Image (tube, rainbow, N blue to C red; front, top):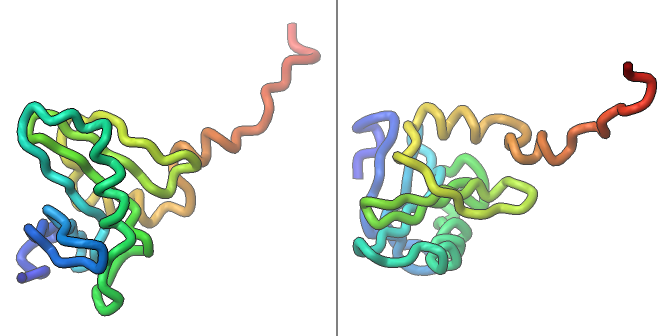
Length: 130
């Protein structure tokens, strides 16, 4: 395993405290997320529970952006779901491609997620407008 090979590295069949993740994702030499890979045709809606147990099982001696890991993917190769576990109500959503490691680092370092900021918007002022 050479975490310095690139900014983003995916390590296959990585042993965790909660089982072996199909892929453990690293960005800038720190664990940022997991990928649960399934065969094509598998319904991904029930796979989120499996990837959820991997984001909490990272060995203590491994560098990570935070604990539990913020990002989880479920993928069949033709269909991919992404979940940001820091959201107020985390849920997987369909994406067209895996995010670049630069982007994962950028959003991991933001104090709040987009959904958190949207969830905490002030109430709309509807009085006194023409």
